[in-house]
Amino acid sequence: MIDLDLGAPLDRHRATVLPDWIDWNGHMNVGFYVVAFDKATDTLCAQFGCSWEYTRDKIGMTFVLEAHVTYDQEVKEGDALRITSQILDHDAKRLHYIHAMYHADEGYLAATNELMLMNIDYATRRSAPWPDFAMERIEKLAAAHKKLPVPRQAGHLIGIKKKK
Amino acid sequence: MLDSLPYELPELVTRAPFDIHRSTVLPEWVDWNGHMNVAFYVTAFDQASGAFMRNMGLGRRYVDGKLGMTFVLETHVTYDREMRQGAPMRFATQLLERDAKKLHLFHEMFHAEQGYLAATNETIVMNIDYASRRSAPWPAPVAERLEVLWQAHAALRRPVKAGRVMGLSRK
Image 1 (cartoon, each protein chain N blue to C red):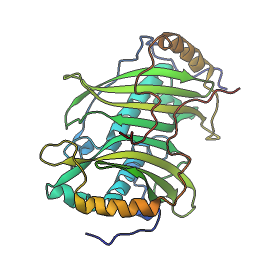
Image 2: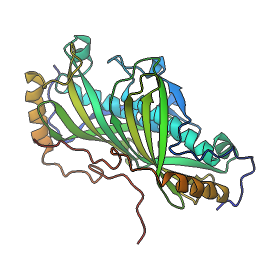
Image 3: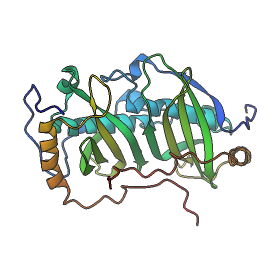
């Protein structure tokens, strides 16, 4: 397993907006923000040994139960992205976390993605507790992330605000 | 505000929920878990939003004519059941709220043959002026259609999965 990175938030994921990710509005399409965020989830899961090899070796999988995205500013083809990840909460089977996507050169916040992830047993394809090796690392990461303020986008209720 | 649109609008479908959009899970939407990847649920739902927007008169011609665009501000997805490659999808869309510039939609995705609920998507869409790339009121004919749709959809019950805030419920 890779070395544990207890920097908070986790700030290891980098990406570039690909030509295929652009829609007729000339910017990254809403679906591909989630493609980019899902790859940042892989980077986070690699921290506790539950990324690609976890599934390749038929140990387990991780399924997303729920996701919330805020689209804060446009990004265009070729833009460099920096994605940070913050663990908000966890239990025996689940992980609650939020990603923030920044334009890596200009620094602005482009989007956030709050997620609920569940550990899945490979054979039964049903929820199962995190393996011990993963839980040990999740505990350490969660403890390191706990000192961070909760981003305002976390727990946001979607809706159209009524003017008073 | 645009007072008119320089193209003919499609016949308005007022049946509520809006149950027109159909799609299929494409091979490139499947990930290493052997099911539709989380991101492509959002792509599939975005296409369902597109169908709803076309019904309002905001299709491709709206963008190609450099009149305006629609941007998603926020989206919330519940992943209820897996979908495999080739699975047929049926979408039902409910208008939850609207104002002068924005829409609040609630989509349900069903497996079209087996009937089960696969996912839901709640989304806020905003009208954008093409030139300034900033928010703008709906064009007048669209605002008119929106009010007709609102009358039809306002009678529907609010979906149970709408308005969710994410968190781990403690036992």
